Image 1 (cartoon, one colour):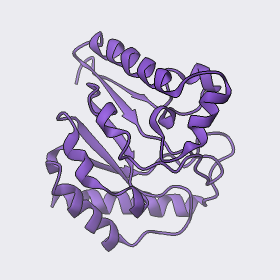
Image 2 (cartoon, rainbow, N blue to C red; image 1 turned 30 degrees about the vertical axis):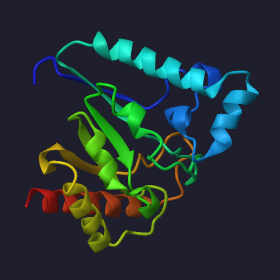
Image 3 (cartoon, helix red, strand yellow; image 1 turned 90 degrees about the vertical axis):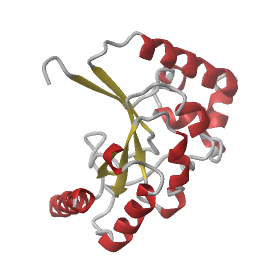
Image 4 (tube, rainbow, N blue to C red; image 1 turned 135 degrees about the horizontal axis):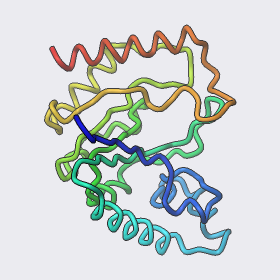
Length: 198
């Protein structure tokens, strides 16, 4: 599409306050680690959350009509470790009210897979991060197909995309996964996409 521009916001607008920590911070209440860090640097976590919400709303209201802005719910990704362990239950009531074009969400662990929460979206597309990028261990395709089937109960399949949970390397120090393992993961994503389109 001519003039089409896709921006993926992978870091918090208010990352300034937290040395640019990734954005899941603002309502990561099942994991109090980040909430405590906000308090340690002298800010109130509720005020930071509201600041993020109002700032994001203002930015999104002024975006060009031909621009898609998406948001990634990031659990962290460095040397095959996640920084946070927060379920989505406490996030979506706030985030899904913002007019992002779509959301990238990590569903590579069963404990995050409450797909009923996706019904709270305001019509945005959803990218299901089903395949883990932090290990050579290849997921069971049948398990992932069941997750996809469950997601389809709550989201129009035309609004679903499939991807890896995140990238294979967020920094020069990449995840502990071989190149061969990365290709196997991408092949699995392709197989899942074909199943979705079947």
